[in-house]
Amino acid sequence: MSQNNLRSPVGVVARASRWLLVSASLGIALLILVHPLLGALAAVSGCLFVLGLVGQRAVLAPEIISPPAGDAAARSVESPPRVSVVIPALNEAENLRRILPRLPRGLHEVILVDGGSKDGTVEVARQKLPSIRVIRQPGRGKGEAVGLGFTAVTGDAIVMLDADGSADPTEIPRFIDTLCAGADLAKGSRFIDGGGSADITALRRAGNRGLVATVNALFGTRYSDLCYGYNAFWTQCLPYFSLDTPGFEVETLINIQAAKSGLVVYEVPSFERDRLSGASHLRPFRDGFRVLRIIVRESWLNPRMWQGRRSRVPAVPAGPESSRSIGP
Image (tube, rainbow, N blue to C red; front, side, top):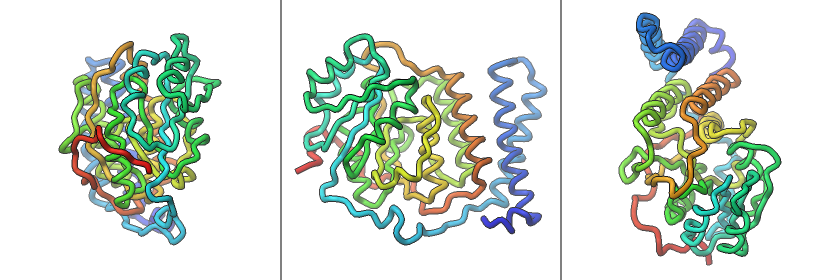
């Protein structure tokens, strides 16, 4: 959308409808969390939400613009690609003991970013996988951890893998196959055919659904899942991501910035298992607010809608991957 379009009457209405949608979303979230009994205000916010959504859909049909020559679409990688797996961890020794042996054969490297674990996480990782590279995280938060891991990779493709055992390492070949089929970002989804979750609560499911609807309305995407950390992308796509957020909202930030940059995104069916052991570091209300803040910020920083080809259809069908090798 050009600057002239943004100054035109349609552009003004488009921007107004977008911010109406964002404001209503924020209002609803605040009412639910701070004062659930304010039903009248919640009803008003709901009406504004619907009005903003209608306006957004009516005047902001997303532009479809092919990525420019020399962009990520023109990448050159080895065949098969060298795959780097980045695992952020904080006190996940028992879980790593069980998931590291399940990694597929042929990986180029596995990078563990340790956030100051006190339970022997690093020692267990080195015992189970002597070739693992360990990076000590000076600060805190998943966002900072994955950012550190990304800067250290030397492979052609990057896979984000949680250390709590909820993501199945044997699904990695499915993500790599999806990249090789033409995707810039292979985005895991629990809510398409072949995906699922044994871990998500009703509250988190409802929150995720609302956030997905907001992102789809604001950025012209058709995502089915937003707050899921199992993703893979080509290393050459790293310049498109500015990961300046410390927490779990980093997953949302990657998805939004991929859309704004016109990267080709395919959703891949993935099953989220229960955490194997220990307590989750996720805090639904706190992290939900952080995700919403990122959505608002990214909408404000760049009003352009989705610029590239879009698909929510998985490029590779779901199936058992436990015997697959992704390297020579």
